[in-house]
Image (cartoon, rainbow, N blue to C red; front, side):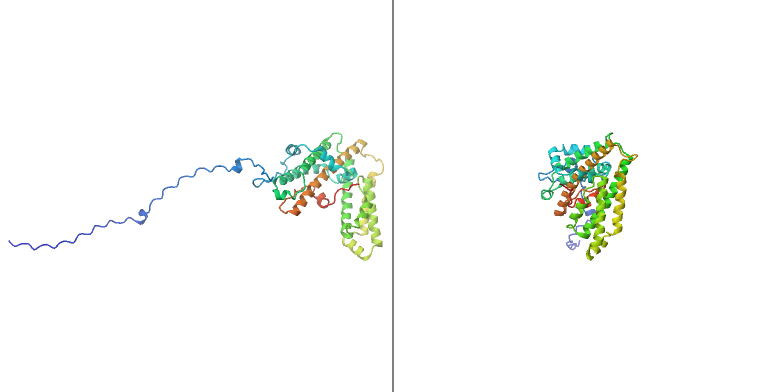
Amino acid sequence: MAERPPQKPSKPSAKPSVPRKPERQRAKKVAPKPKKAAPKPSLAKTTPRLPSHDGAASGPKPRAPLGPEGPTLETLMRRLGTPDADLRDAIFDGIEEAALLEIGTRVDSTDILREVPRFVAEASEIERSLSTAQRVCLLFSPGILAVLLGEAHRLHALFCAPAAPPDPAGRAVRAEVREGLALRNNVLTALRNALGAVAMARVEELVGLAETAGRLASGMDQLATFIEELLKVGDRHEHLRLKAFHLTSGRAQVLRDHAARLRAFSDGPKPGAMPAWAVDAQRRLDLQDGRVIELMERVLRAFRAAHRQDRSIRVPELQVLGWIFDARSKGTPLPRH
């Protein structure tokens, strides 16, 4: 039997390849992120804001509401405390009642009582929010705001007192006086523009105060006479300046016409005139109007001066009485004797 030839050694067979998984199956699965817990409320929302040691708030401070729903005299008085009686007396020491009456006749008590709460609330908020560096610029004590609120509260009591009811004759006189004061002051401002501050010393002496309708009429006549004389004897440059600011003989006649209407109210008793008790009540009301305006003016001047030194310091805004402080609060205080 023939032998079989030796078999060739077989090559080792290659290991069968394992089919690769698709690429998307090879990627490792990312573990799902754990759900975040609900965020805790901010400390700024849950913790009352406390002033820092330097008087600045720890964060931006919202403005006090200034609309109809804003603070009242009563809530502000509770917040700012009892006014210092000695400070009040010191502020008004040396100011003539005639000067307070003059400014008091120019505004309505209702406008003052509407403006004071908004004005004091904003002034207090600004003062409390100042940093140490800003506070150096504001030369003003918050105690003055408390005095202002106290005087406004007195004004409110007088305004609501049954001893001083509205009187048609009184309203007519006050309206005529306010119009006359506005006309006179407008002409005085034009004269200051035309002649300069130095020449105005004589003019203001001639015009005098206007605590009554009769004295206002006399001052307006004196002002008209001064303009007419200057138009006659002034030099060419003075004439040009007067003309540039519309200070003509026609303007002088407007002053005289209004003075005549004022005298019609003030010369002697007339049918329907205010009785003596009403005149006295109106005088007290005008005097208290003047006290409140004087305090508001001092506060406004302090904030405006601080703003001029540091523009980041805000100035409390006026919505009703801004017109009366536009010229006065920039450095023209009430006259003293």
